[in-house]
Image 1 (tube, one colour):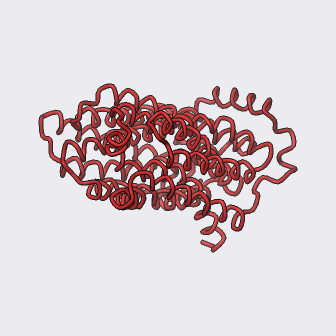
Image 2: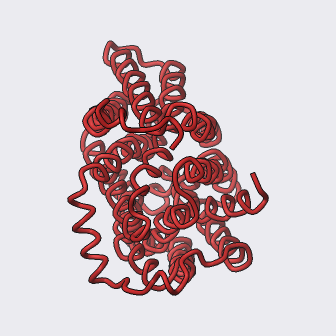
Image 3: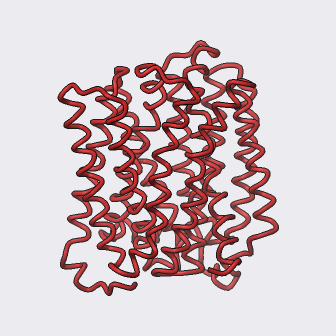
Length: 401
């Protein structure tokens, strides 16, 4: 791989990681935020849910804008809005103000979620895109490893408000790298004819594309299973199992290691077996692992080590699902890559937000409702893969795409 290829992956990965960084880093602080702001568990979880919603639905607007004006300008605007939201969150006097500024911060983060995928499509297709996407995921996935660990140390030494100053600093760094290390990938001649009208036409076309929607939904329910874990894990692992914030961060990071390690095999496996076959095998492994975990927990075996081991295996399989489905979904939509990426991201986060909301209704402080939600999402993802990526479609796919 050339240094340029690696540099692009690092910059795009950091831009994509800004939003998740603002989630993962403050997860260990959720219980202390509730105590400090005199807020209920549901209200504190709302500060997480509202961030997901605004980050998801903001992509609907920012994606088409990037098709019209280029990729870099909307990224600058998103990073600026993210910084405003971060500063406001750090200074929030109440849970209501925190929720409001988290909404702004999520809107800013939406640019970093939608546009890097469009840039990948601008530059590459097929296996080259899969390689770049997997490298992007490598940088992106550093967030759930380092962010909770860093966040727990910051929280213990400086309090939860310092987390938001830190993520604001990360946005400043991302802005500098964007300005110095990434060129515009959508030149002016390719923007001709792009408008909100063509974006609406593009959305109508994509909403009628069953293959696109199926691929997006496969990943969407995979991501939703992780969102369910995000929203409940700190309360369960700290409150139910008695872990300290630091130990919780280590536990949380283990799953990210599995996700990262497997995602780096995407390009190699795609060249040998084809992207569609990789997705089918991965979702089968993920669903099987989660069903086993649910069956174990449902029999009354409430053991942290068992849950940790099976989640590690499951999220390893999920690490193969996300980059491959993203590449496949974007493959035939290069002319409206920003719009396609935006709709993909919005649907991912919409599915995830609904899953988080439903899981919150059944939350009782024990791990079983969380595990049930994860398992249901994994089974739905498996079912969608069987429908979307059946053997009839696979028959026309060459092993090296």
